[in-house]
Length: 170
Image (cartoon, rainbow, N blue to C red; front, side, top):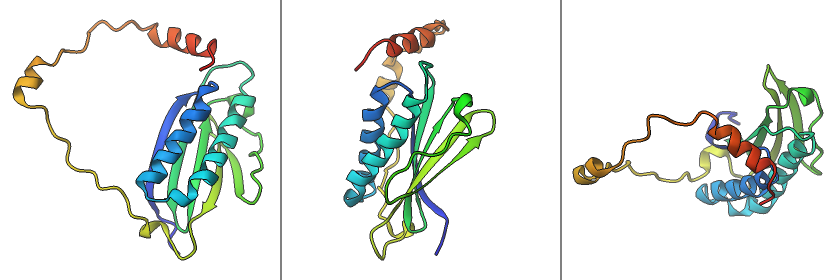
C-alpha cells in the first residue's frame, strides 16, 4: 500500500466559534469535489470535534486554526493545526472508533489528526479528483477597466477585524 499523499486541500480560519461551521462546510465541499459523499457525515463530525477542541482551549485568545484534508494510502487524514503555544503538548481529543494523534509544531502550537478509512477496496490513488480547467484571463477591455488595488492599506485593519470577530457570535 502506498503512503503517498494523492490530494490535499486546506483552509485557514480565525479561531472563533464560526470556524466550526466554516470548517465543516469546507470538509463537505472537498469531499464533494473528490466524489466521496459517503464520508461526509463522519468527516464533518471529526472536523467539528477537532476544531471545537482548539476553541475550548483558546482561553479567550484569538488565533488561527488550519484544517487540512489529505487522501493518503487507504484513508482520509484530517489535520487541524493551531497556534496556541500554551497547549502545544496537549493530547488529541478522542474520536470513538478513529485513530487520532497530536504533536507539537515547533514554535507554532500543535497539530492534531484523525484517520478515516476510505471505502473498502479503495485507495487514495483511485479517488477521482476534480478536473480543473485552465484559468481564463480577463478580456483586454475588462483588464484595462479593472481598478488597481489601493497602495495605502491600513495596517491596523486586520487587528480591528480580529477584535470584531472575537466579540461577535455569527
